[in-house]
Amino acid sequence: MNETLVQVRDLKTFYPIRGGFPRRVIGQLKAVNGVSFEIPTHHTFGLVGESGCGKSTLGRSLLRMQPITSGEVSIAGRDIRRLAARELKRARRDMQIIFQDPYGSLDPRFTVRQIIREPLDTHRIGDKHFRNDEVFRLLEVVGLRKGVADRYPHEFSGGQRQRVGIARALALKPKFIVADEPVSALDVSVQSQVLNLISDLQKSYGISFLFISHDLAVVQHISHEVGVMYFGKIVEQAPAEELYARPLHPYTRSLLSAVPKPDPGAGSAGTIVKGDVPSHLNPPKGCPFHPRCPVAKPECAVREPVFQAPAGESPTHKVSCLLYE
Ligand code: SF4
Image 1 (tube, rainbow, N blue to C red):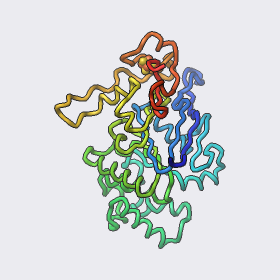
Image 2 (spheres, rainbow, N blue to C red; image 1 turned 90 degrees about the vertical axis):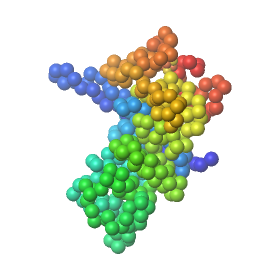
Image 3 (cartoon, rainbow, N blue to C red; image 1 turned 120 degrees about the vertical axis):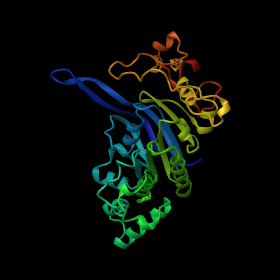
Image 4 (cartoon, rainbow, N blue to C red; image 1 turned 45 degrees about the vertical axis):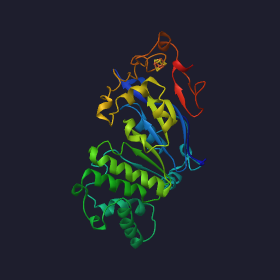
């Protein structure tokens, strides 16, 4: 078993909701509400859920790009919450992010060379010649020609731009990368190329990834373990093979029913979960999924389920649902 690289314990990231006149705090948006998980070295943890479930906030909280309300985050043995500014800058060499939008995440005023070299410049790694050589090496690693180094982002396709974003994320040889919906803005034909690249990098360089997506199909082949997030919490978590072979939570099953089947004769994909994500101003009592759950029972509106491995299941397969208590 690989050693633990990322350890998250009861992480909470809340935002005040302001309203009324005069403006005052009228509630709390519990974007991440008590999440715990671990990512071993050389592993990819897939985090899946609908838009607004808190998965991007969770990813950014781990890198301290969002203020954390409470809980513990340890990455490569460092307690991320307690790092002073200088220590945090040093720690950022070990943890990077790939953004969703390859159009918005690259500064249009800079060439690809400047964009990829920027983290090396900031951390004063090597001299000018070393940094330029590194740019060429990184371009090669992500499948781009050296000759594109002096072009600007607008001269590239979406897939190429995402490769540039990945090269920049790799520049400091990180141990951990948060990939926040890295393929959702790309054409379907390009998505698999970028997914294959990330998978190859994970294997070749032994990087650990938190791979965030709204699409269970996208994380299936790239993840060792998958967590399904709903309304700020992980509601099901299991090794990837197990989760896809035997989904337990009604929400996971609904998400999986929306995944298109490769065999046209196997029937059409189902519909994505019906109804809207609940309001943070008026969160449902009991199980937060009960207003949308197709198999809810009266008790679900009263009692909140415990996140645990059900009797008879593997201890690594946990779910938060009263059907299994
Ligand atoms: Fe559905 Fe009830 Fe399970 Fe919640 S606890 S997922 S409402 S069956």
